[in-house]
Length: 217
Image (cartoon, rainbow, N blue to C red; front, side):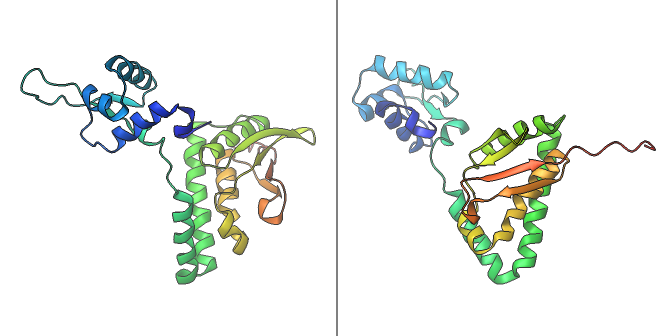
């Protein structure tokens, strides 16, 4: 379970109240918004602060002692859904119209390669099994709902959500982004064995062994 749905209704309401208050809210504000007691608000805040979703904001003068205020952290804001996929698809559709398929494919390949090289520098893979586990986690973070599985006597990667699915149905070459990312991240050739766009249950990938080091190096 991810996002707001992992919280009960009161905490969801508290987080939404903070999202709408750029300058933060004090305990009194939250009591009124949630219709709960001071102690209940403090208990909810303690849990959310410990989780890194809420932090102390700048205290505001109140005619007496400054009131402590609470704000969402960057991680707290990430709980709220953002339809990046729809926006990205619309941008790519416009690029296909204006620049043509060859230019878009080249751009996606380069983007995948750059992101893959960044991923490789953070978490290099030692062998094919390690590559599958590492890349599955990286693809999962990009929204692919991926996992490493053992198939045909080796570790492979399956992804159950294609982030470009609507576009890939019309332009299957956008899958070049996935392959470029995985090849750059793993330093291995990648085979695309199954594909959601072709009607398979998942996108499935296998990795070639790492190239042997050049003895002259």
